[in-house]
Length: 159
Image (tube, rainbow, N blue to C red; front, side, top):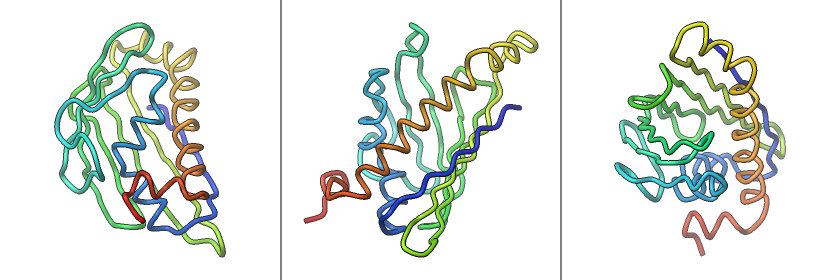
């Protein structure tokens, strides 16, 4: 099973980083290039333990839907979302947050399994792992940008 691990350093508070990471609205912004939008479940605001969201997007020219559920939630240190329905055989995405002096270390551990046996494994190696890594980096860079500026207030509805 492929595993993508990313670490992002952010000069902000752990609470802001955690909340931006659980924000459906920020996720929509980070995936605008795939026309991704939430169509069922928690479709805006912050997603929490046991809540579901169904995303619809276009990836590789194909309109797809993916439903994920928050299966672990320890605010502001960790949460996990897992696919419950979608094109993958499985997805498990752990998000970790740690104070490190005057910055937050945000760590993603994204594990996925494609269907179709050896063909899925080949697709993972040749295309999908790189595609998903880039997808997560774009998302993390947006979280960093919002958290390190006043932009987070527009997402988290703070004055």
